Amino acid sequence: MNRRLTLALPSKGRLREPSWSLLEATGVAPQEPGERVLQTFCRNADIDLLFVRADDVPEYVQDGIVDCGITGLDLVSERDFDVDVLLRLGYGTCSLQAAVSTEDAAQSFTDLDGRRIATSHPRIAAQWLAEQGLTAEIVRVTGSVEISPRLGLADAIIDLVSTGSTLRTNGLRSLGTLFESEAVLVGRRGSGDHEAQRTLTMLLASVINARATRYLLCNIAKERLNEVTALLPTTGSPTVMDLATPGIVAVHALVPAAQIWSLLPQLQACGASSILTLPVERMMP
Image 1 (cartoon, rainbow, N blue to C red):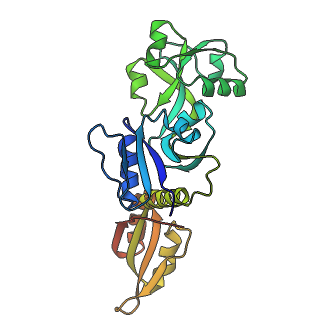
Image 2: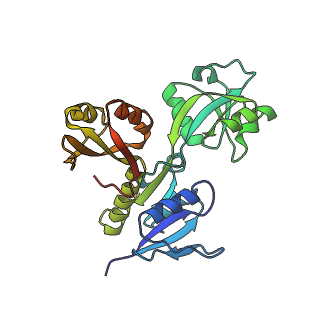
Image 3: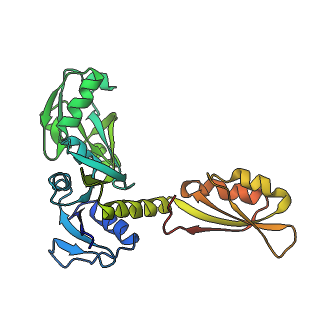
């Protein structure tokens, strides 16, 4: 009998909904928990789910309370947890940036030398400053880092930024990025023989790959086939099939979703017709 896999998911915050959506898309059929229920299971897989704070996920994984979990890469790096990053999940993206008041004369990272910097990520900040050869006094703040310069607590901040609107609202401007973060799947070290963990990682990756891909279909005259295939941004060979109409073929290919905007007009200019793009549910290499 296979041992059940325990997976920790964020119980709230910006990672909760996309994490749940990603898990659902794999087809394991997670059972929606009732109100205030912190544990549930998956109907189509031997997976038990535990809902905890994203900040606590790496420690739960490290200590063996759960086999794997979803959290932010910045949370893993800040406290240097002894876990394996199994997969980058492509959502919850943000960056750790240094910022100063809009009235501050600082223009680059080097202008932070010898100054006071408030941050909720003191380990990452200290490591980065050392790599840059800079010396600064780090003031650890657990919340509302952006207000620190206004209160006179620090000259600058190092904080997570998603859109930059919070910086602007608090009269701050960015000097640049120190660290890029996103949601990640982490696993307990030493559990590499756990078949369910490998299967979950594979299924999640197949959904992530599919979300970034579109299935493209179009018809083209045979004499212009080389023009069309040369345009296709795909690593593999497209599928080409003869149609009932003589001299016309159908081209099928997987293409990056981000390139659809520029690709479709080019295909049309080459004479392609009946152009269709379809979403992909799962894609495994």
